[in-house]
Length: 127
Ligand code: HEC
Image (cartoon, rainbow, N blue to C red):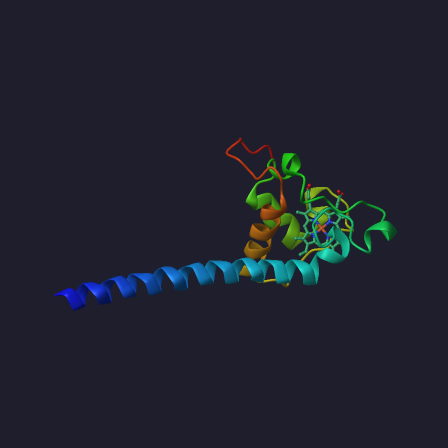
């Protein structure tokens, strides 16, 4: 009986550890994708100050601005990332990333949400 309890606790512990690990992995996946595809314009820290930013006719969005980011729904972010700036009546300088998998786009969204301060609250979305 006692041994079974010990096993049960060990099993629960292992489950918690493995799920925490996969969450961390997903986060770092979003970061990797962001650094590969987005940081050149949006900057490593998401402030819109990547190395290419100065040469562009439109300023890349600042993902750290929580006041702006909180107004944007996940759907809006998903659409502008996959269909490009022009699709959202924004600058076409923001490329369309239609080649990314849906999961990858979600991971990127999760990552840029994490850059915003203050973080997105429950306020109603306006776009
Ligand atoms: C070639 C430079 C460039 C690259 C690369 C780029 N962006 Fe952009 N992005 C822009 C520019 C410029 C804007 C601003 C468009 C405007 O304001 O009209 C923008 C706007 C956005 C917006 C809209 C924000 C808002 O307030 O409406 C999001 C979200 C965004 N980019 C996410 C990304 C993500 C995620 C990636 C990587 C997958 C990425 N961008 C890659 C240049 C770029």
